[in-house]
Amino acid sequence: MELDRRLLLAHCTTHALSIVAGLLVVVPMALNGSAFKGRCALFSTGYWRTEDRPELTGDQGEVSHLVVQQWGPPAACQFATFVGIFTVLYGAAQGWRCLFYLHGRHDDTLFSSFLTVLLSVCVLFLSGGASILLSLGLVSWCDTVTDDSTRPYSCAESQSVPLYLDVDTSSFYTELSLAQASLWCVTALWLVHSVLAFLRLYHSHSQHITGPCRPREKELLLGYSPSESGSPSPPPATPTLLV
Image 1 (cartoon, helix red, strand yellow):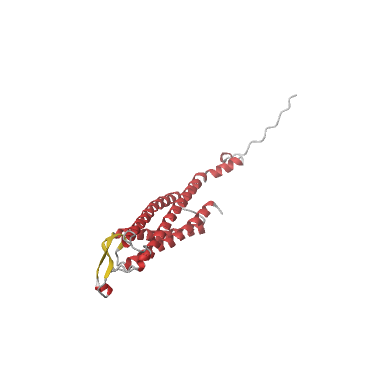
Image 2 (cartoon, one colour):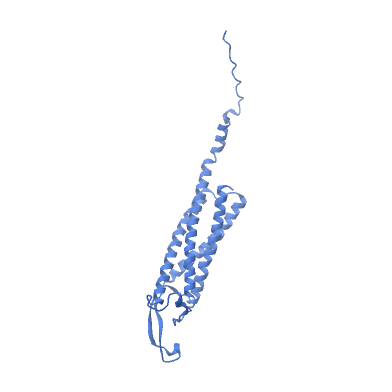
């Protein structure tokens, strides 16, 4: 198998993995947005309050409930979702192109390979920023839910604790942690995309540089020159005997 074919096959596999990882970002974020009624839990601020809430407990006892002062900016959740959607769409389109190139036994042009490298590097930085943003936002929300780790339960366990909010918090940690892990996988895959795209660019450049020289090198190795093709070669000189 030639080098460019191996690179194409590796790139096809990476695109397929990107589609799966992107879906594992988009689906949990969509479910979390639906459960939170369009609000973003990332970077939300609030505090715990203990008071008599008969409408919550059904009696006159005190109950601790979470009071959200300000929900997180919607852009924090939308940014992660955008990276996931773009990864799915780009992976599907480029995966089809790789399969087409494998079938046709050819590769991108030099300019197209350069654009692919540039796009891969740009999206790599975007996905890395979205991963950091999602991780920090989840930590901030967990600090709010666990009251800075003073509650007798962890952030993962708090999704089974009634927070008495007007949103569904029964699976927020599962959804956001799955989206977080998948988004970091997307970032790692975009790094692989960048490396493979650069290798394909280098291979295309090498083929472009060495391709026109190969016929000339072959002629020189065979002792044949195009300028000599139209005229017959001179007969060999006969030695003269000195008497």
